[in-house]
Image (cartoon, rainbow, N blue to C red; front, top):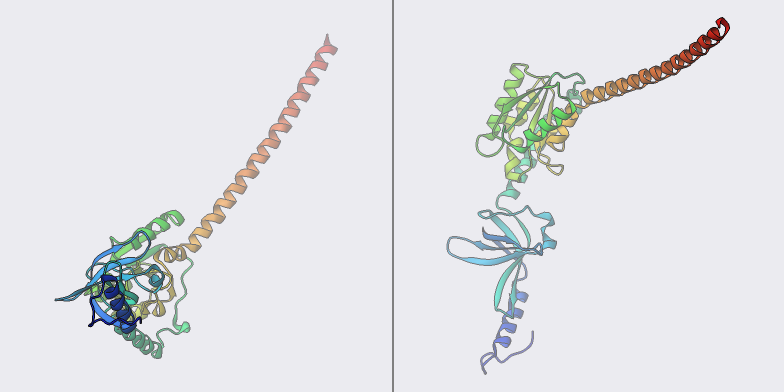
Length: 315
């Protein structure tokens, strides 16, 4: 740090800001702050800018694009725990908290709870491969436990209509996020099982935060899946999401769309073979007809020639 006699003379603004800059960035390099996100504004550069606040104070914060790869996209109102350093911009005298790591408050605790719960059910044998039921090749009715208004059911319906339009689908509407979601999902799984309403059951939802997907790791859901006599495909979130339902189910699909493709695979392949056979038969019939036309044309030409010769002899 450059030496200034800060008490013996009057400093210029540049000198004062330089002192503040060096002091702040040397001392406050590793700082952990908890607060609520407010005024979130992503910049065209890809960087995030917002304010971290609590009940009585606020500080400007920034997350540069290079640090965002391990973070969920934030939104106003999120309570987060961040780690970073203070940066002082000497030209404007602006202090900014530059964040390198950030997660929602409680997320780490939640992940620990889920991991401990996973090990508990693993110890009970809930994830053993020899307990998993095979996905039936012949299905007439597919059940889906999910939100009736979410993206997951739209994706599933679009894919099944295209690949297996004859397949009957029963939607078991359930809350898939928030208080009561686990009980709702478990109840619908048991309902489908009690009535033997379908040949295969997809349980899932689209993507979301760790908290959003936590209901699929609740004991009620795990035990309902484990106790279900109908084969269950767990299809929660995206490829990177692994709630405990993925381990307890008979099959795991990385997305609801992938689950629909898995469920309709046999029907789709049969339709493909049938369409191929029909196309082959159609081509064979057309070829035979073309060959018959040629033979008929040749016969007609021969008959015409014979008639001409016969007419010349009789004349």
